[in-house]
Length: 167
Image 1 (cartoon, rainbow, N blue to C red):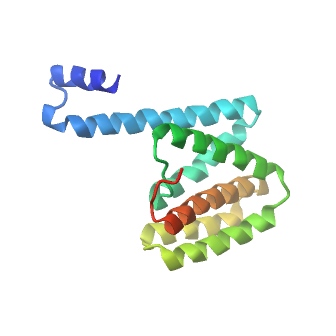
Image 2: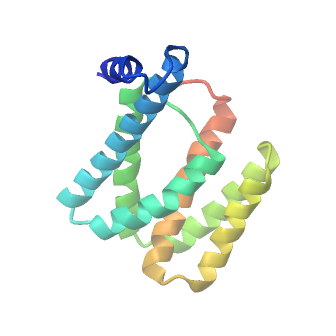
């Protein structure tokens, strides 16, 4: 499907043949990330947590883009693991573990500072995280902390296993 779309763009002189691989990869990333978001949306709809979905995506995405995290060996596994993480996030939201999640976030942030090649984005993201702790309502804070915790666990996995695909 992606190849057919790219072939059409090449045929219509929208893109150059020499740029084919770049556009194929870009289109794949757009389609795959859209499928992850759609699966989250579907799960949210089934579980009556649409408000959770919007806030989770809002808090999850910048961290994942700027800091990264662990990767799966195949796109299908990534979709399954992402959905499981999202379901786990909803479960955490309903547990009364808010103070534990904040403590774990702080510990994981310190771990990341020690073992990651930290940069301006890293410190900016965590500064925003701590500033948001002062102003957001508790419902938003719970979701923010869960999103950061799960992303931090992914980054920790990546640090420990040095980017090897174990999933």
